[in-house]
Length: 156
Image 1 (spheres, rainbow, N blue to C red):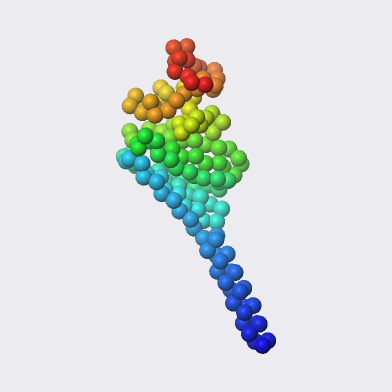
Image 2: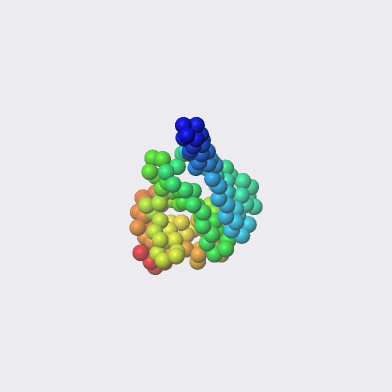
């Protein structure tokens, strides 16, 4: 009887170790959005993500509190959000023409299922993709002022 108890205890310990290894092993996610693709993987505390598209590949690594989380907008624009280990949240949008924009998450608002970006972003987005977003006039920066003629496009 003693042998069976020791055998069961040993089996439980080994099973627990194997379960722990599986839980801390690598995890991965992928999202294709038109000609763009976002891939991420996490091993231990380190996240690695790659954005692939017509302009090439961009790969980064870091220790993140959350993310990266990918989303597809209008079937063509790949967005990515993450929070660094220091607590800084970042939003990035990648466009099929190879351009991208990035803002701190405090400058991005979600209204329903749409992203609301600072009005200053509108001029940096190709004309054919501007309607995919709404815009706000909350981000006041002396070096990047809001032009009076663009205020009419602000929803917030």
